[in-house]
Image (cartoon, rainbow, N blue to C red; front, side, top):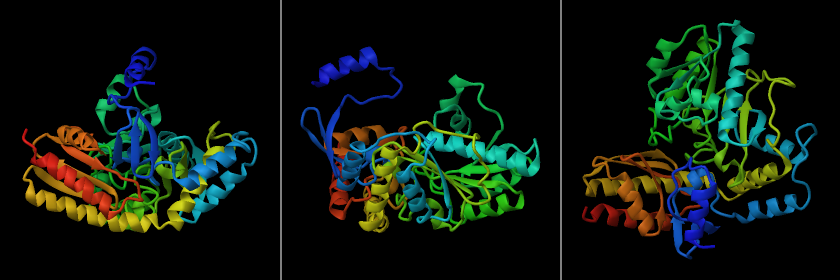
Amino acid sequence: MTMDSLLQQLQTYVIPTPGRAPIAFVRGEGMKLWDVEGRCYTDFLAGIAVCGLGHCHPKVVEAIQKQAATLMHTSNLYIIPPQMELAERLAGTCDLKRSFFANSGAEANEAAIKIARKYGRTHGGESKTRIIAAHNSFHGRTTGALAATGQPKYQSAFEPLIPGFTFVDYADAAAVARAMDDTVCAVLVEPIQGESGVRVPPDGYLTELRKLCDRYDALLMLDEVQTGLGRTGYWYGYMHDGAIPDVMTLAKSLGGGFPIGAALVNDRANVLVAGDHASTFGGNHLACAAANAALQAIAEEGMVENSRQVGAYALEQFRGLAAKHGQIRDVRGRGLMLGIEVSDESAQDLNKGLFARGYIANAIGTAVLRILPPLTVNREDVDGFVSALDDCLSAPR
């Protein structure tokens, strides 16, 4: 296996939907990744927040190996013991007590949309089906989740989309208030918008949305696919405001690197019954074994607190770079979900410079560098990343 042979296979046999860098990783451990040519990198992206425990966490690996040798799948026609355990574990981490399991964040959001529509019809009749979402949001690429995504660049080639979504400016509770009426069945937002550049709303934003949803008998639905499970320094992003949602969607780091998604509901939003929705692979034995091990590791190893403490340290260090380098326009984020905005359209160049120095991050467009390290990251790791970024910012253009 060589890089040339892999590129040939890519060009010949794979539909080119993702834009791929010409690199292939073949091994990972903790914060480290090794490519096919043996080079080592420190990962500050964690598979876009999927590998929240780092790569190949021993507890997750052991759980997958044991379950794979025992029973991988039976279907949801039967009771799945690891799924029951996972549902109880998730209920213990938040204010929502029932779970539907899927394979991804997009599928979890599809379930949330169906929950919202059924809730609306049940409580307000055929006209109560409208969902308010946010401009620049990202909820997935399946057709329902795409219809809820407020970015035309992802939508235009696939129209007509599912109707019934109204888009307003993010982080603007007054805009939501203006769009609300008795035809609204739900408001769907991210506690922090990740794909549009780590956009953090003002304090109290989710609280105001909670009040509006209560006033108009609509569901507050939070897409915590990226913000959930310790990423922002709390178990879930909603906990910064204390605004408890009716529906919350999860995926990414839920399986510790293994694919699994979930839609959690409170009693109010518990409207789906047998036959309303299903997922062939969702919540099978293998996926739930991985997720149970991941949740146990997050709790036992203090990863949520580490996210809060090391994230605050990283934010401070990045702000120090901003004081030194005038091209940094803004530094923002919570916990270990951080963004650095530059004023000179250099985000892609900075990302390439970091890569050349052995660090993996993510450029969103030309203006924002997104940083999503594993929740196990320490201050020394941050110092190394900051030093590399300082070099990139200082390099001649």
